[in-house]
Amino acid sequence: MVPPLRSGLLRQATTCLRQNRPTPVPRVSRNAAIQRLLSTLAVLEQRDGKLNMSSLASISAAQKLGGTIHGFVAGANTKQVAEEAAKVQGLEKVIYVDNAAYDKGLPENYAPLLVDNIKKGGYTHILAGHSAFGKNLMPRVSAMLDVQQLSDITGIESEDTFIRPIYAGNAILTVKTADSPKIVTVRGTAFDASATEGGSASIEEGVDPKAECLTEWVSEDLAKTDRPDLATAEKVVSGGRGLKSKEEFDRLIPPLADALGAAIGASRAAVDSGFADNSLQVGQTGKNVAPQLYLCAGISGAIQHLAGMKDSKVIAAINKDADAPIFQVADVGLVGDLFELVPELTEKVKA
Image (cartoon, rainbow, N blue to C red):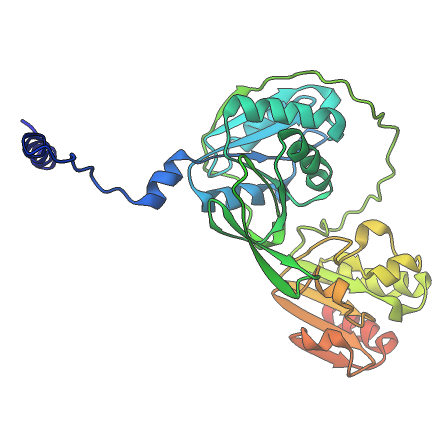
């Protein structure tokens, strides 16, 4: 028995053929049709055999596009990382390349690897986090594919239209591109990371061109801490130039951060003055953070700093200058001497 809808279409088509008229085509939603054609490769980061959770924002962004979503990860012993990534909701497949040459993400050899897998998969969109890894890798990939890159997007309007901040976040730009594939880096704080449980993606080994790497990884000196990671912490305590010295920074900021269970951040002025390590810098030239609580002391609120933290859910500021720009974005402001107020606040939090 022919279903009623199909039967009606057959009758229409027969009538049109008899009358020498064009056969009607069933109407299908344009957006739905386009979404079925989309395919996204989310480039995931791994370090020492562990999946970098901040890179999962690229999967969340890909879900807004629609279509199929595959993940990609490379490095030593990455099958285990691929199995972990396969549990992330939203992924249909995880492609991995097990080769220690890609451990550090050096773009000279990682870019040819990624390009080969992009061409094999025929993807329409390539998404990666706007992290040091993504900012180092994706421009080279876009050059090899001869397309323009869209950097640091915070929103997606359609498969070819994206939103990104410019002028330190003071203006929002809507960009439409006809390039294919579309190479995009995603601001992690603008998209919630996908759930790490409940997914059931398949796992597949990718192609490895074994491209020669002209750069040699020598060493790294990482500051180790038991505190939460700055980029993903729910609470952040930051200090600025108003602390006047490294000794005062170390005396006031870490105890307050420990009392709150928070990560430590710093303004560029504090980092340039040697108060804090460069890895703690928050702002346009540092890290973008969007914690539940951002508490800062001795930070005036320069536009470059605000660009990196103004998406925080609650902003609390301590500054002796009542006209400091930081108070224009703060939800809670305390005007006074931070050398008295911060220790007092620390004791009240501990109590």
